[in-house]
Amino acid sequence: MNKARSEYIPALSFDRLTALYDPVMRLFMREAAVKGRLVEQGRVEKGQRVLDLGCGTATLAIMIKKVHPGVDVIGIDGDRNILEFAREKVRMSGLDIPLFDALAFDLPCRDEYFDRVFASLLFHHLKRENKVRAVREAYRVLRPGGELHVADFGAPRNKLMWLASLITRHFEEASDNVRGLVPEMLCEAGFAPVDAAAHFMTIFGTLSLCRARKPA
Image 1 (cartoon, rainbow, N blue to C red):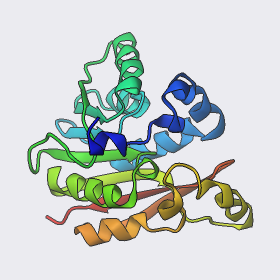
Image 2 (tube, rainbow, N blue to C red):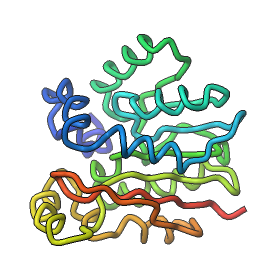
Image 3 (cartoon, helix red, strand yellow):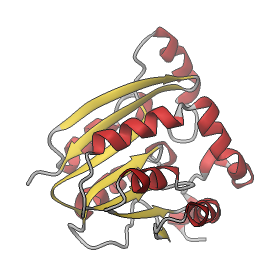
Image 4 (cartoon, rainbow, N blue to C red):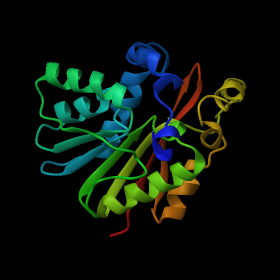
């Protein structure tokens, strides 16, 4: 295994727990509400190209394609185990969504190819240097005027979420997220504006949605 692969943290931290990922997301992470809002804020238009970065089991990619059948949706994930689940879900959905094995911080994509990039619960899987690299890669593959839409752990919004964050900050690589550093990384990569779009309370802490635009 190369160094980049060894630094990748699988869903729920362990490969053997991958089969539990979808039930955990549905029961504890308000998945339908969070991803539904993410798709809504993406304002995807017919004919656009969309990348689901760190697609996991392809729940978001399938949702985007169902809501916007006239767009090209591609999913990428560096977890080969979870891609097996994703490909089966896509097959069962009957939708045309190509899924590729690749790391978010080393994308095999052309410059300025996509109109929208979505990243749902990806960044807390990445160490800080790879978070920065992944943000820069998203910037690179977006066309001028394109948008990155992120849903991930963020800074706590109240005392209850602050208490939950005491645990969450030690979960995978979520510390930077809980400290509110992801929007700063987006700005440093060149995105402008970077806006907070919504916040959701979960038992694991605050999930924050933001949108970032690559200047035209």
